[in-house]
Image (cartoon, rainbow, N blue to C red):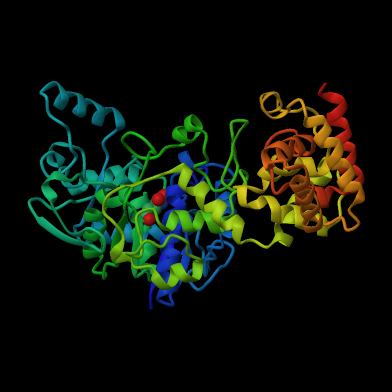
Length: 500
Ligand code: GLU
């Protein structure tokens, strides 16, 4: 039974890389008929940010990444918030001390800083490990009486992992294959603090074990922690889960990881939803008008593809096709134009009724009340050119109000000496056409052009200018039909009196 977890720390808005981690966990779980858990890793109280947990939950809900167990959906391994599991961890730290895999360390921050400086002066780097631990204040260097004394006295301590010396540790990662490291280069990480709180490493391993996690799927930034985690499983005598470290998400241009600042600088969201921090609101994909399906599809292809040229996938198709072992090792470049393209594609797939309902909300805020059937018709004519519902107004405002000005360049180019005569004659044709439909009107105007031996270029651009104000928009006769006879004639008269 596959069981995976998304284990974010509530330290701020959930970055898009975290969302992709959640998605890949979700896809993997669903593909194998397994469980997807949400565990909140909030043991580091200095980094705790109010509202971040709710933001994570809202984002997962918005994206349809429904978890089977987790905060708010307590299953048999509850609670799922690490701060609420606090009493549980100490016994595991004790176990490691008792079996020789961990030790107490009493070094003060100042003492460690001093050691660091001394090493730096010699051009070396200080590492708390096999090479230095005997010269520092810990239960390996002090006598057991001294250690006991200090503990009884209530001296501050941390529990450190005793990283083995000179072991070539071979590990396997589902994406990277075999990974090897010499443990002599690693440090004795802190696992537990005397305030009773475990660090990330201990809590993460204990919880993954207790929650019966089978696969750990997380970002590449956690790859350096894999040796410690594997050794912790060994130290506890537990079977380690499989590991898969997902590639980084890279900046659109230049080197390095995509950051919050890139989004601000280049003007695109890097968060799923809006997030307010220090009085400043950072727009998220949802606030910018992206559809959750578009974001999911886009993120799924950041570091993975099914091996063909296809790009549009529903969640169900992704679940079917997803293969963790086909995830790439190399970083995936974030392309803000590509997500726009996906949004455009998904907008086209939506029904006119759904889009019209969304658009109508905006129209109402503008004080425009139009029958929904008409809005649907308008949407069907313009959506092809829209990426967001928010584009609709610019693409269609002439359906609701007469142009307030005319594109000067276009007027200069298209408005000829005989244009007023042509417009007058078209007015007559429109008045005399009994059926006011796009097809009938087009035929009538075409007949008129033939009789007068006029080309399209002489008739259509001036008409479009009169109706739209510029040389844009859908088929002219569709516009005419929708705005109606009276309004069309009024706009044609207006342009005649305006351009002299
Ligand atoms: N709490 C860690 C994070 O914020 C979890 C890393 C992991 O999945 O092990 O990403």
